[in-house]
Image (cartoon, rainbow, N blue to C red; front, side, top):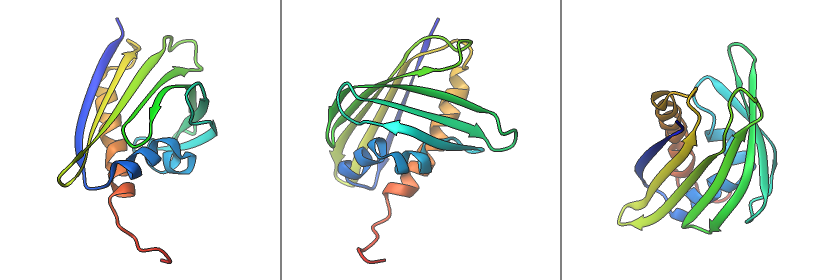
Length: 149
């Protein structure tokens, strides 16, 4: 049976910056791949009905797995809903990821729900991967760097 993981963080950054990190191809390459992987975005069309395709490469072995999906709902600075499907037929099914961004006194509350995760991906591995990715996301979006530097 496919399963669901949920994550929650409070991030010291505005929702607009977090949102941009989810829809900018260069930003995704910087933060989305868990530790030990690199990321490459083949294409990204961040609009409702638009699609994306990317892959993660295991830095140690050089093996890659590709996946892609479509954007279902986009509310700038507030919400993203997209689906994912692996290109490998051994990893069937479609996952749906919902990102909710809510302003709070110290920045933004980030909630992530990923459902439909295939059985062959243990939920603990999925949590670990997301936790590593979120560490990198926070390092990208929290710094306040003045223009011109």
